[in-house]
Amino acid sequence: GENVGLHLPTLSVQEGDNSIINCAYSNSASDYFIWYKQESGKGPQFIIDIRSNMDKRQGQRVTVLLNKTVKHLSLQIAATQPGDSAVYFCAENMAGTYKYIFGTGTRLKVLA
Amino acid sequence: DGGITQSPKYLFRKEGQNVTLSCEQNLNHDAMYWYRQDPGQGLRLIYYSQIVNDFQKGDIAEGYSVSREKKESFPLTVTSAQKNPTAFYLCASSAGGDYGYTFGSGTRLTVV
Image (cartoon, rainbow over all chains, first blue to last red; front, top):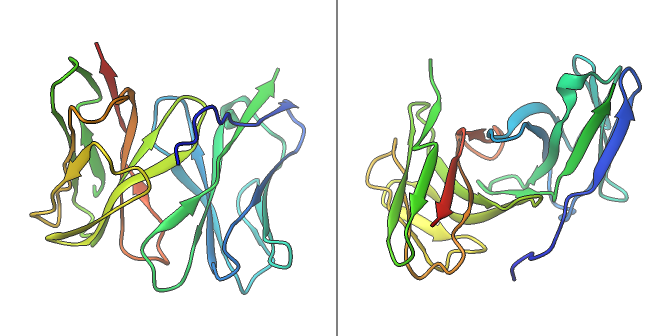
């Protein structure tokens, strides 16, 4: 049905602190996961991905952690900057399918 | 440069009118998608297409229609049957399940 009234959770962090954004994914058979960043009025952009045969993957200032036991994904942003303010979505995919399932999203606000 | 282009960026519709949103990609991707995003909410799948001349309904297809006559193009028509069309519409394309989505910059539709 329609998700009427569903609002995004918000995470507020001080500039320079580390941010941790969490996501509970839905399908235990999913084997590929992506984090997207969406700035206001723009389309989502790829940040980092991870496959189910990994527990951790690091990029520039970002780290994704995968816990398959509890179907949990997290995105860690080091030394958060004002430009990191955006909505962050996780997405999951099952091998052999073209369709991704998106999480609800988390709004990150960076405080000066 | 390869990419995915949505047009127009802003669109105004009178009640009772049909409008068509354009989505074009030159990435040679097989799959294309349409998502709807309401303020403060996540992405909801409207329609998707894995191959030319074939498409499937997503979670909220009522009041929308699509066509996929060319690999590069996947236009979305918002019909008068869609009772609450004001939203941000995102088009995406993908080369397959392991490659994630490339998103367009979105079209903001407002009913006046």
